[in-house]
Amino acid sequence: MAGSHSHPDGITSELAVTVIDIDDPADPRVEDFRDLNSADRRPDLPVLPGGTPGKSLVVAEGVLVAQRMVTSRFSPHAFLGVDKRLRELAPTLSDESVAGVPFYRASAAVMAEVVGFHLNRGVLAVARRPEPIALTDVLAGARTVAVLEGVNDHENIGSIFRNAAGLGIDAVIFGGACADPLYRRSVRVSMGHVLLVPFAHVESWPSDLEVLRDNNFRIISLTPDEAAIPLSQAVDAERVAFMVGAEGPGLSETAMLAGDVRARIPMTRGTDSLNVATAAALAFYERAR
Image (cartoon, rainbow, N blue to C red; front, side, top):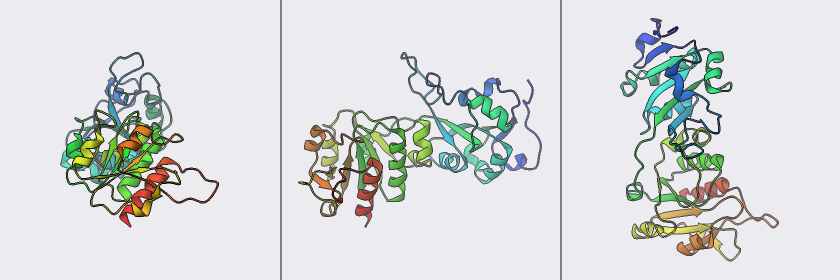
């Protein structure tokens, strides 16, 4: 098959990965990178439309996100990228943790045919999903966590993880009806932090909030309700869990009732709510402050 051997150039001899040149977009070795925009064949889908099991892969886009994947519990099993990105990633790809992992080097044109669109970031990494982390393990040692209910927008989830990483949140807990945090867009918007900030899914919502209470967390329901106390008065407990709801409807009344205290972010008249990722970031900052 054309392009099946690595090239003995200067850069590849210093790397732990195995560099393999790909010049045929139909090469079966790059199947895990194919059709990233396809609604029914995307490799990051755990279940395909119709119920067929999907590949359930995690896809990292760009140099920075690929670097974070390498340092995370999501061990990449392959890379696809142009030569320029290979060189930029050289320090990361020299690490023993990626020894022998194939880096499929291709032109931008070949890569676009494989992926299904032109990828400006020029490099992808893929990993298999590890076993989920148990809720009790995520809470062990944590002081501040975020709890999401009904957050079904992938970009909001990515933003929440990026904010969580930047503002000292120890973990993210997924309650009912949330979107997949490992969808490609979530990973990209989070700048790879969804791979680094621990997260867990609750099995029973909202009754599993009792697990947080058993671990001495004060559960703060964020709401624009004028009757709620100002956020600054709610964040002084030793362990805090901020609970946020979907864009628009916010937290369900059932979830609200399962919390310990309702808190609001003071806002000027005429504004009824903030974007969920923005509201979460303000809560995280208030806690850090």
